[in-house]
Amino acid sequence: MKAIIRKGDGGPEVLQLGEVFPPQPTDTQLLVDVKATALNRLDLIQRRGGYPPPPGESDILGLEIAGTVSGFGKAPAGFNEGDRVFGLIGGGGYAEKAVIDYRMAMLIPDGWSFEEAAAVPEVFFTANENVFTLGCLSADESILIHAGGSGVGTAGIQIANHAGASVFVTAGTTEKIQGCKALGAIAGINYKNLDFVDEIGRLTDGEGVDVVLDFIGSSYLASNLQILKTKGRLLQVGLMGGSTAEIDLGTLMRKRLHIIGSVMRSQSLDEKIAITQRFSERWMPALKAGTIHPVIDKVFSLSQVREAHAYMEANRNFGKIILTV
Figure (cartoon, rainbow, N blue to C red):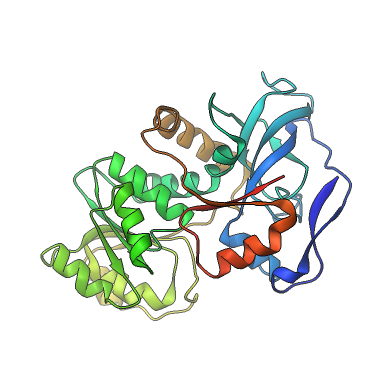
């Protein structure tokens, strides 16, 4: 089958279209003819040589797939060949075929394209787990979502707004801020020319926010803690700004804050199945109804993978970048 092969570690130029043997499904896996997959920041890190796949997972990039079932192991549990499915995987999405545990596969709703389905799993799973399961955001609370124009950001804005919370965001352009407001954010802060601590203070009359969803890490840590209310929660889901920082434990103790770290890929299969179920039960009805929706910025073909990676690294996207297979 055709797949994207990584020739060493480095920039987008190390990626090339090649031929590999197709995966063989285990007893609990479906074999899927992939029609669309999506880019994630983790793909860029893995391409550079970091964040290797968990044991037993494909070393081909790609964490989410949408396609049709073409085979299965011994326990398909109601799935049939030809079913349109989508879901989160541990690796292998940048290819013509991939495998997924049947307990993590979801049927694509009628009327959805493969591209729309591929834009959902990683970002909505991550947003739901952090904003609600770990962050316990409630309708009368407020949240600051950094990188509001990212895939997780656009998903998080929608689900937090849908739950009745007040949503603030940071983003790097006026266009992205306007896009975030269209999704339900009540205010956006351009981090390139404004201090988000000052702006959150101004926007909340000095009260701060209950929850912060952060992808940046060390360079934002002190500021994130400063704007949190008493009993506030910081959800750390990325380290784009570094992984090491000093912390004022006095602030942590005095305000009784919670700092919660989270990664998706390294969790156990059982944990990922539970994450899938929580997402499906809470958000698939709203997604099917169109109340919330995946945000797709641009679609590339699999052979354009280098251009797609360069596009993401330049932070040009608002929402998801899709690869059609």
